[in-house]
Length: 250
Image (cartoon, rainbow, N blue to C red; front, side, top):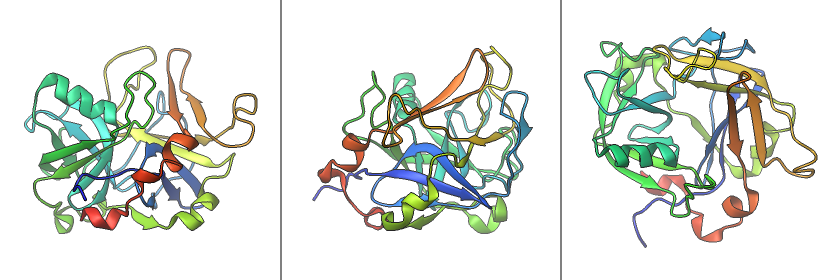
């Protein structure tokens, strides 16, 4: 069997009493974690996230000495050497032909004193990723060395895994969901944030498009922007050859 990771299912998070979904897809196991948040205004004109609100949040950059200017994407820390991110982020890195680094343990892109910069060893893009439709927009990053959790304490933590048998209880329609990252914070601007931002809102299903299952959700951020996430049940969860347990990667 190849050592290449295989993908399945979706990442699910829980924040205190509010059920959280982050827009990513995963393999084998669903992920669950806890963040110190309550529902707040949206990211644009919204709130700065503290170091402990989303401790699994990492920044994918190309310059270890200037994380802000070289910022590419966010990711989630799922093990001491593994980060899950979007496939289109890895694709952008390959187009730039630059090495990738991960900033862990800080919400501030210029706070390398408290955060850790770790070089990426290898990336794995879903074999059925479609850069036109963004189906299977999921990738893994393996780090060259493990995160030093004793150094960053509560500011960097992995996300606890749960089994697929109980995952549905964490993702009902009308759940409160959270998005976080260093994305655009000014209405109709292109510059990204220096400090991690977070937004909590309610997930609403579109009954006209998908009357029976959640497959596509949109969180409207402003009249210029929207954040969308694609869920394709057939392509992700019914593709049997992608099933592989997360523990086999470690």
